[in-house]
Length: 257
Image (cartoon, rainbow, N blue to C red):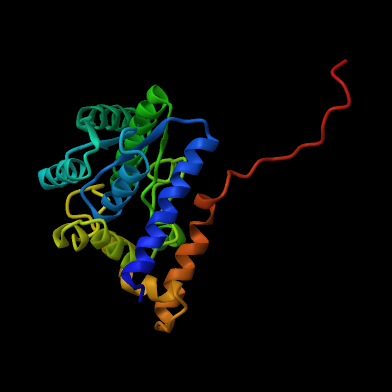
């Protein structure tokens, strides 16, 4: 287990890394979506340390639990981050309504409607973050942790669509430890993890694994064979999310004449 001094050193190293990435990109600051959960809260804290005057937090409700918004606003206020609220519920309803109507008009069976609705939420959030980032010459900061990155528990071109990932090497346990170091209360650190994609959705129920088990696997501790198989299957199946799309390389034409 890390000592407080070691944790503070790792936090400071990450803050320096954020500043370096922004400088290299010739950007001016950072924007992060704040959901009210521990991952986005920790990233918000890191961003506020790196760029106290050039950091914006976005809360983007979309038919969401009101408590999520309250916690997100509380986090932003605590870190003294400028906060913007963009309600995506209307846009989500309108797009899904037209998609569903169009597909049904063509006799298409909606096999993955729930997944489509959930992933659209994540992709609308990504588009909104980049709208702010482009307007301000900021970089979009992602909030995925190591278990999420390894198992592919993120939406392709949604919460996976970011410029930089400062906590993607951290186990969930270390994210919670960083939360304590950053002064976040236990109610944030121990909130049931959810991506807020649909009512009642939780990370662990969707993955079929607990974060503790994935942490242990990533730390090369002993886990049950069926747990190892499940984690490795998720990793293989999500490989496409961590790579650029495959492209077909055809022989070049010798000439246009």
